[in-house]
Length: 111
Figure 1 (cartoon, rainbow, N blue to C red):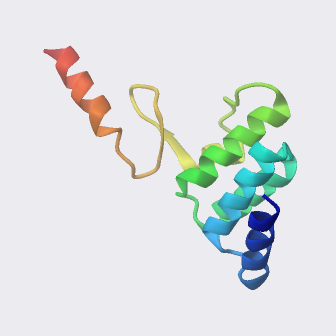
Figure 2 (cartoon, helix red, strand yellow; figure 1 turned 120 degrees about the horizontal axis):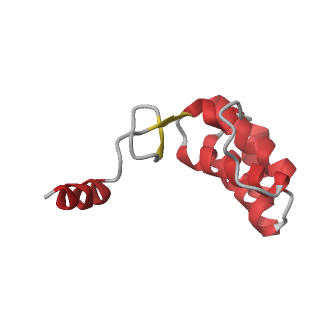
C-alpha cells in the first residue's frame, strides 16, 4: 500500500486533476486506511474534474455514508447533483441508461 500511495501522490503532484489517481487514492484512503474524510475530498476533486465519473460518485457516497453513519438520501448532497432518478427508483448518472440485464428482466416481468 505504501508503494501505491507514493505513486498516487507522485501522479497528483504532476497533475492535480488526474482522474484515476484521485479515485484510486481515494479508494486506498477510504477502504484500506479508513480515512474517509480525506478520501471524500479526493472523490470530490474527481467529481470536479468529471461529474459523470461513476467511481468518484460511488466513492463520494460511500465516504459520506461512513462519515454520517447512515445511508445518504439527501438530494441537496453534492453527490446527488450528478444523479437523476429513473422511474424504477434507480439512481443513475445523467445521460446513462439502466443496466441492460435489468431491462431484460423488467421486460420479462411485463409479459
